[in-house]
Amino acid sequence: MGRRVAQAHEDGATVAPRAAASDASVGSVTSVRLSIGSYNVHRCVGADRRCSPERVARVVAELGVDVLALQEVDCGYHVAGADQIAELAAASGMHAVTGPTMRGAGGTYGNALLSRWPIHAARHLDLSVRRKEPRGAIDAELELSGRSVRIVVTHLGLRRFERALQVEQIVRALDGADARQITVVAGDLNEWRPNDQSLQALHVRFGRSRERTFPARRPLFAFDRILVSPRSALLSFVVHDSALARVASDHLPVKAVIEV
Image (tube, rainbow, N blue to C red):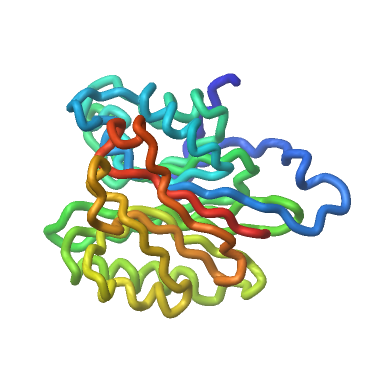
């Protein structure tokens, strides 16, 4: 399928042109199952220290999701001339929304969202904490089967106090949302403690999803999460643990299925 590269969006995120909905939204269908993934691609640098967007794209194909939250995507910030979002979007045939957290002369680095469904709107949330690595989130709305699904894609900070502040900002951004709207928070939440202390404000609203994803070759920590509200919409949550995924990045991807 041809390349679908996002165009500039006035609020700092970028959003791809809207596309026609798939056949699942046509007619009198009352519910749709939507598969969502989250993957920290580590600049597409694998366990062998080789940078290979093509290899990461094959893991994405293995996942086979409708919507994919990405973290640590390099678009020329670390490697001049690289545009990993464009490469992954072209390989998957999905639309791309970018959410850079770092910008340099060569390009950007940060979060991204790939989607097979029309993207109604997207904005960027600045979650940066002073003197720490810049962080952010993509806050996007998708349209499918006549309903709106809100997806927040993020990569939280390394320190507990950072994560607590960033979670508060995300929760505030979601306050006042339509109670009938399905909301998803997906990403590398960087919380390794068993009690998930820094994520409590999210868990009150979304519940928990805990499966070990890092390091990819021998997972010990449940960094990568997909949280869904209302909780009844979440049908399944699993880690994608394939031979290729164990080499392509330092994180394993996760996958959830929700009912819309």
